[in-house]
Amino acid sequence: MADTPFDDSTPLATELADLSKRRAALAQAQAPRPSSPRVFTVANQKGGVGKTTTAVNIASALARFGSTVLVIDLDPQGNASTALGINHHADIASIYDVVVGVTPLADVIQASPGNPNLLCAPSNLDLAGAEIELVSMAAREYRLQRAITTFLSSPAGEAVDYVFIDCPPSLGLLTINSFTAAREVLIPIQCEYYALEGVSQLVNTIDLVKGHLNPNLNLSTIVLTMFDTRTNLAHQVVSDVRSHFPHQTLGAVIPRSVRVSEAPSYGQTVIEYDQGSPGAVAYQEAALEIAHRGAPA
Image 1 (cartoon, rainbow, N blue to C red):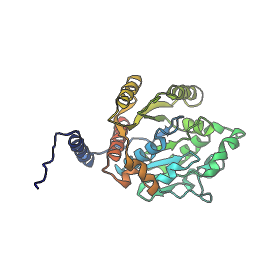
Image 2 (spheres, rainbow, N blue to C red):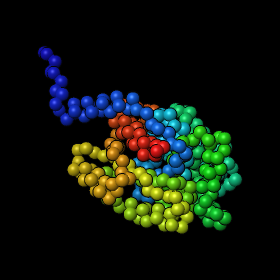
Image 3 (cartoon, helix red, strand yellow):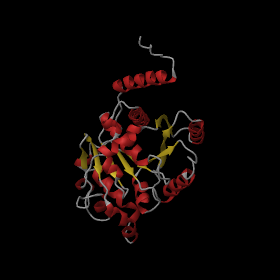
Image 4 (spheres, rainbow, N blue to C red):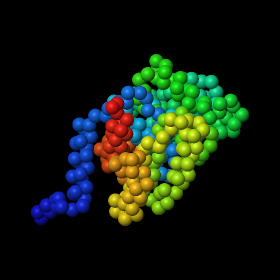
């Protein structure tokens, strides 16, 4: 029986051809490095939106393009540390020791096994009690900001191009610390029902922090995640978010992807786990957009 010829006019064939072109474009792409370090806080009070996944994969993609990137895992769950292959058990010096104690940030940073340009200040479960401990401390909202500023001005931090702070999915003193330490906010929004729920509250929080604690803070980037091309709802959400935030929303949209979900269980980002998969390609495209938006004029 003769082989059935491949029909290159089907939606699947079109999708595969498009993915192939995007991979080829990425192979030739270059990401400009910023003239000074860019510090992002990655935040969304709504859980399950791909916050940590977005933080580590954009960081990994920028490191792949040649930048030196530091991820600060400020979530007590430690998922960012896990995804970067970083050891973060209770005996390891962590971001808790920096925020609550007197340990310099440089002393807790580890390099990801997958890329020496990808650094991480890990979390551990001690961080869960930090909210209570911070309440009675002087300058409690600025503990992380001072640690990052000191690190970036030191010889150890001079090479760092980007800092991504992965926040807990709540609005407490840890998240406030991340807002005072950053200049830019990156919000992942999932392409599902109630996508914008809570975002307006988060935007109000950003405005409050900007007015009272950090005048340099700005919502610079929105990443649309968990996009399912098969549903009208996902397309509607993309349209709604872009109409509300036309300048902040990236053109790259992150699809639902098995590979993205699998990667952390191997202690890897999807960029390392399967660089050519649709999710990895989309995160690399998002990273390029971020790099070009912040390129020196």
